[in-house]
Amino acid sequence: MDVGSGIAVACFNTVFNTVNTLLSLWTLTSLAASVPNSNSLLDTLSVPLIAVGVGAYSLGLLLEAISEFQRKTFKQDPKNQGKPYGGGLFSLATNINYGAYTIWRTGYALTCGGIAFGAMTFTFFFHDFASRGVPVLDQYMSERYGDANERSKTVFGTL
Image 1 (cartoon, rainbow, N blue to C red):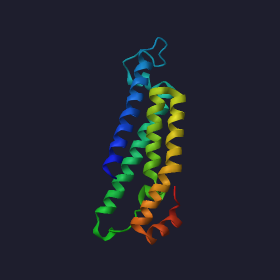
Image 2 (image 1 turned 90 degrees about the vertical axis):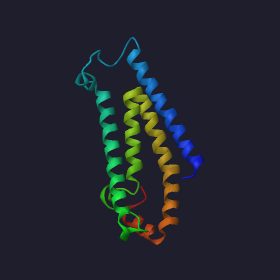
Image 3 (image 1 turned 60 degrees about the horizontal axis):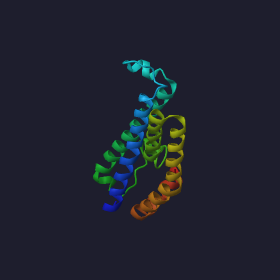
């Protein structure tokens, strides 16, 4: 990734996280707060929307982290140099990490901004993944791994 792209990603994440934070503050400080007025985490998680959001957030982060650790372990082995990774969670989908990213981003938005913002976030990230992310990643993988990538696509598919 070039420096310009890295800066763009950092700016995007900063703006997106700020919107989520502002929405959660708005929810907590509004007169008709949907979150029970309690100091207990269990009371807060008793709100179904928050429970689903926190669950999606946790599941997505866990899947993304595990998949990246599995890939890192594979890449550290010198005998795997120049080979695409298709084991572990990546055996379920070529871009399992991006799918997990979409899940945790949606859970974060759902918890902070409610159903509408959660649905909008899911739609945005899924559309970006399907229309921009997959073609870019597929091109990168084809250029980097050549025939090995083509063989892995026939086994695992693109998504």
